[in-house]
Amino acid sequence: QVQLVESGGGLVQAGGSLRLSCAASRFIFMIDTMGWYRQAPGKQRELVASVTRAGSTAYVDFVKGRFTISRDNAKNTVDLQMNSLKPEDTAVYYCNAKYYERWRPDSWGQGTQVTVSS
Image 1 (cartoon, rainbow, N blue to C red):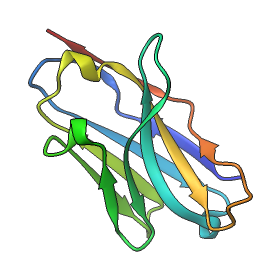
Image 2 (image 1 turned 90 degrees about the horizontal axis):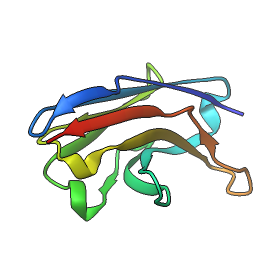
Image 3 (image 1 turned 180 degrees about the vertical axis):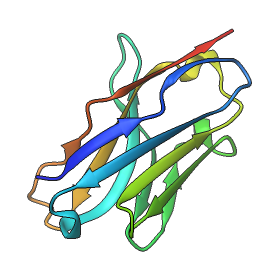
Image 4 (image 1 turned 45 degrees about the vertical axis):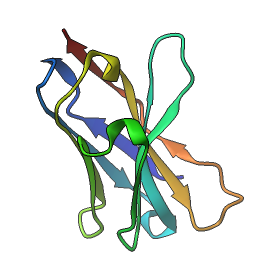
């Protein structure tokens, strides 16, 4: 399985910005889509944004215009630039990798905490 390591979380005031990074290692060639999910206390984990190896991106409505996902296939990294952060963006953010072989379960990073104060 691919190993994913996130970095870049922290505490920021509302309206501020943070950049999350995820580095993938091992079996990189097997990865199709990479993305970011988040999970707030008491809520289910939800997709935030994703990007395919070819560069196609997708965002959920509540982050459109504020977050930007980018992927560097040469460096095996995927970043999430988060601007205009809101208190409701507070959550643990997880990096995710999906494989070309759909029968393989997704890989997940350990998560990084993002806290937005009002």
